[in-house]
Image 1 (cartoon, rainbow, N blue to C red):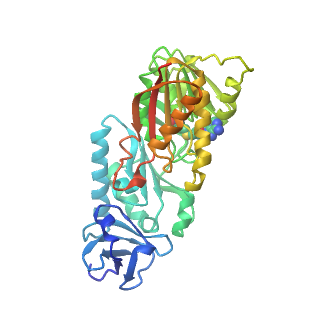
Image 2: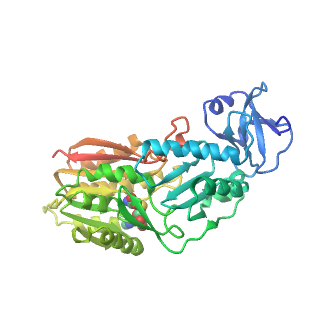
Image 3: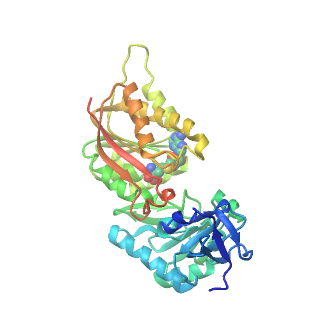
Length: 400
Ligand code: SAH
């Protein structure tokens, strides 16, 4: 292990690493004892030669080192097996009933660059760092051993791979997959296209929130905006909503959510529209001067995609968030609930709430906050690693 190339950090740069953050940027490095190959394991020391841990090196990435362990461990199958079993235990503790969930969430589980999702008996792997990419065969072998899945797919189609010097990749690592997989979330069936769908197939990060928001749905007229496969809408329908209207601009997503409604025996309560939510809300709230919009929903869910790509796009994104909140609030009856989510890492919960309050002010609504949401516990938040926290949400009741 002493023969590992050593990355010495500049004075003052060790604290974040000691505290558990796994990223070492190029500018934080004092010197290298010898130039490591990209993807090679290195040891990290502070400027006084105090050992801090081991990690994968990649000179091509701005993140030169991704720390894997504060100990001198070897990165081999037993290492991955130990980490994956530990991550699995966290899921079994926090989501004991779930059959589909994220087994491993990169930095959240101290394996930067590696995501593994379980969709019933199929696993989907996403790799975003060179070090992990090089160990793909080992990782797949361990997954095979622990889970004996029907298939292991790779969906490494993130644009961010190019920053690591990696091409976008995908394919089948083990087994075989014919068509869509029927995935169960809280006992409801969803058809997931694991090969071509969003993210790795479904939005697992909302699994706990589907249940939580559904408690506001009994007897309600519900509007599910940005509904994708119908996660919020179908949970609301099962919880006894009088009627659920689902909106998504993707005709494919709408068709899939229609099939999901039917498969769960909820089709009678649901209606669907493939539209742009901005246009739809605008049309529904357009009135002549001196006319008023007639509010007609008891529960509106807003779960848009991230409107930000980077910090620079935040102001535009906030305008977008305000616009949909403004119009949604006009359509909510007094006493009704707005359940709203923001999955942009660049917009924090305070900023997000400020936007909602500004929309409430403009519509002269007063809101009572009745719930605060985060990502489901299979996407753990490690506050020491701010990048692990991205999903935030609130439920507000319209007081008047
Ligand atoms: N609520 C969903 C996830 C939503 S993801 C769930 O829990 O599964 C965002 C969805 O918004 C995608 O399905 C995308 O097709 C849709 N979308 C993006 N922009 C849109 C727009 N302007 N109008 C309507 N749908 C949009």
